Image (cartoon, rainbow, N blue to C red; front, side, top):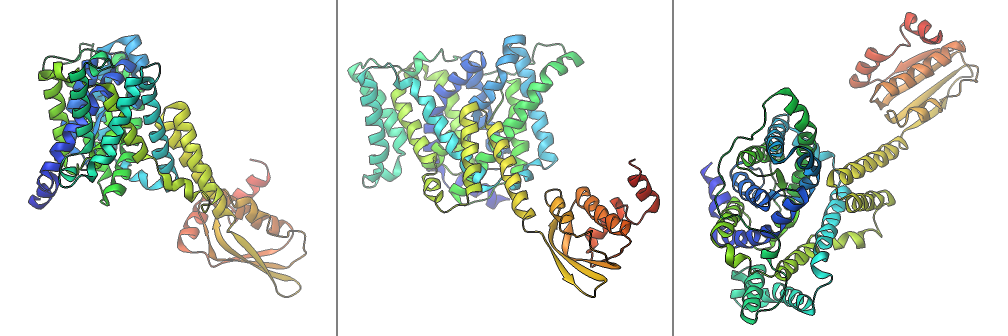
Length: 495
């Protein structure tokens, strides 16, 4: 346990602390923007980002991943806040956390293994596009100073690491933010700043019980929103964890992450914050700035609170152009450029899944819908591919007998092909169906087998089934009717 503690907390202290500062600075405008989307005061998003980042540092299953208030979650809160107010949002946040904790104990994090690589790639590319698109309002209808500062910021971010020694010690995004802020203040450059986004809180968050009646009616109001928030939050967190796993070449505990996200949201609801989840953009900033351990998430939350409460006047001077440059860097780094080259050699179905995921996420701004569509398409393509690998070979024996050998997987997608592979018009005394190289997966497959056996028997042909494996025999014995005369009569009678 002490070894894990050293790895998670003490193995990269300098890198985690510096990365935490960069993440905290980048979190401020986003938390304010997401609060505005949800229709609540900016302090709700800022308190949420602080609380979630700090709590998840201790409870999460993925070191180096940043969680806070997010746009995907904020979009689901709009109607609830508009119709019922902030207090009901706080209750929904607590209930969201409880549902996520339950999901962790039910080990729903294991469902990530059903998400194909093409869906993950599409998810990453879509997020990169959304991150870039989110910066466009800061780059439209502005003076040339904004473009100049943004380009200068990108120059600092990409060129500073090439400086000897110091370029490796300090994260270039931090230099970008500090340098452009100092420049804007010294020369009084007229550009949009963090202070223009909204008022920053000037007090620490306090524990408060949501001021709503604790009854069944309140539960009915918040439950639909909490279910949606829990699903989207876990989905985005699991996908982000998978991406960070790949970037750092390490594994994470997805079920612990589910519980960790839930605990963080429960705390957040009682501290006056909105529900949140893992953030791919901030996690990328953290990783690229050198953050690897849990200390980076703790530092991000801690620095965020210190900055907004005690350093508000200074933070308000940060030009949005500096943060836009950082987020453009994140978008460029997040996008899988290799996936464009791979489209030439990947199967058409893989490309369709990836592009459909990108299109749905970008079009709806809803990560859950995009990933659901991607997983659905991937499943359909997989089922179609497996169904085409099932064959039935006809080995003609004596004139009045025949043997059919079934090879492959028989399930709902291949059942029609299975049934159509037999010739029921040929006059035969006996038919042997060899199932030793086949596997029957579902009730549809068993029904297809029943149909084949019954059709042969109606033509006066004796049918002998051989070679069933144990799993196939179990499902056939349980659901098959061809050896149950009363069931066959009922079936033939149309019942």
